[in-house]
Structures are given as C-alpha cells and as structure tokens.
Image 1: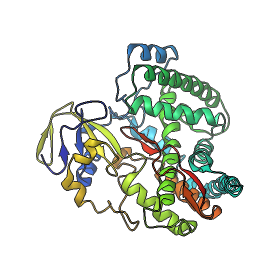
Image 2 (image 1 turned 90 degrees about the vertical axis):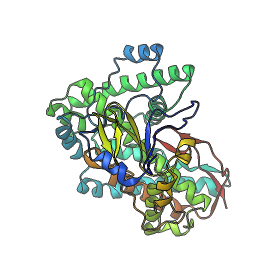
Image 3 (image 1 turned 45 degrees about the vertical axis):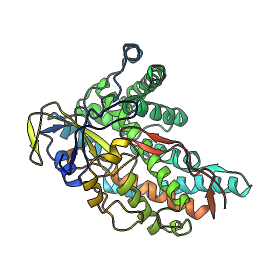
Length: 392
C-alpha cells in the first residue's frame, strides 16, 4: 500500500469500505485536477442505496437530480458554473459583510441575554443555524422564508445521501426530501417568472429546464448554508472546549476568530471528504486504478471513522496542518480544488469568522455544559449537533 492510498477499510455498520481512500494532500489535489480521469459523477449518489419504497416516495414528488453542477462532468458544466459564480463574486461577498455582522450581532446579543439570566444556550441553534441560510437566500435573490423547515430538510437530505440510515429511517428521510423538493419546485417556478434578478431566472435564461434548476438548487441551498452552520458549530465547540490554543476572550478579536476558523478548516472542516470515480483505466502515484473504481478523497483530516484513523498513517503524520494550535496552516483543500471548487468558499470563511467574533465579543465567559455532545458523522459531513454553554 502506498502512503497515499488505502484500498480496503471498514465503514460504520459494514465490514469494508467500497472506496479507495486517499489522504495525501498532493494526491488528492492531483485527482481533483484530473477531471478527464476522475469524474464527479458519484459525488451526489446516496451512500446507502435507496430502497424501492424510498424511490417511490421520491418519484411521487417528481424528484429528479440530473447532473448540473457538483456532479456534472460534461461540457455544460463551465457555462452553468459561470452563471452561479456571478452570484458569489468577491465584490458581492465583501458587500455582504455588514449584513452578516448585523445578523451575527443580533443572534449573539439574544444568546448573551439568555445566559445573563442564568440559563444555558445551545450556540448551534442560537447563533450558528440561521445567519448562513438568510445570507445564502439573500445573495441568490431568493425569499427568506420557511427557515426552520429548510434547516430540517437540509440535515435530513444530508443523512439520506451521505449517511447509513436503516430501512425505516430511510423512508422518513425520503418523505422529508420529497417535501423539500416540492417546496423547491414551487420557489423555482415563482422566481423564474420574477422580474427581479435571482439565481433561478438567471439559470432559466441560460437554458436550464425546471428539473435542471431544481437539481442545482436542491444541493446548493443545502451546501450553501448548512455546511457553514456546521463549520461555525465546530469552531465554537473547540473554542468553548479550549483545545485549540485560542481563548474565548482572544476570539473576541477579528484576527483571532479568523485564525481559529482557518485552523478548523484545515483540520476538521464540515466537509472532510468528497468522492470521485475513475472514468477509465489510469494510474495514480504509479499504481493502477481501474475504470469505475470509486475514490474517497480526504480534504481536511481524520473525522472520526475507524477507516480514517487506520488508513495511510504515514501521510497523516507528514501533514503539518494536523496541529492542535492555530497558525499559518494550509486549508486549500477544505473547499476542494480545480474546476469543481466550492464557489462559496470565501463567503463561508467570512461568515464563520464574523459569527465566532461577534459571539465571543457578546458573551463573556462560558463553559461547556456537555463536553461530549452527539456529532453529525456522515461520509462527507461532520459537526457537533449541539454546543450548549452556561455562564462561566
């Protein structure tokens, strides 16, 4: 076995991993920059195959996910990506900072008030959950509505496509995904017809059909906000835990808050892995890769599964981003690389840094009520489900 690969390893509830696991950052980057050899076609496929019952639930909602953006390996990808990228330009992201800061400050003030009364606060729900969703919808020119449902749908869809639900749970998740898709299709139809600029009518002008816009919107509305919520959640947990070399009071400065966010991005981001599949017989690091072989790319580090801990120890030990103290650690793979790199990377980093900064500034002295909370642990997503703090 090379230092970059582990061909077989166990996944939760199974005896083996169906992926070739790559951990060496240089090898991961090479795969991402060879789309002709390594396709994203499997990036959004359900990790646990959908049962016939689950498929019927989705089909009843006319659920369809043709490859449009993240899983698109055709010549149409570049044009569609350009349309979406127009909503995430550096200028547009920078212009949103006052709005992000205002939302973060309001959320943090409410949390501080509850703590001052002697109660406890779950920072995930109090400060991390809603601002990323509001900002995402506003940037795309879409309505800020039904936020509690959107957050529930997002987590359910992540579990449906990247988790290991049993048969009963899969049916529950399929119903949730179907509800989300019906809601989304109504929003797509409404905003394609709108005279105001928004993502959906921009995609329609580009030539995409309603099912194609729904496909893109389905995962964009999840990834564009839920992964940022998860990044904020992990950062606040590590800050309250005091395990990353930056104190709560230090994080009340913008620079230290940004350093801590970048450290989490480098070591345990909310999207620690991503998938590719070999398009054809090829070679990687001098080893043969067969056409159709599925590959799991580790983007930011060991995220708690046995195969992640045991695979490719040499590469992990050599990766200097794996440190317990923030510093100038690289996080270039946290958002992917190449032609499918996350378009919202700068927005996510900005939102996380601002929310952490405003939360630490507004709340003086806290301690974790539970130092071992339940975590979201999916194939490609991770975060603590709660970060409950009480007055310190």
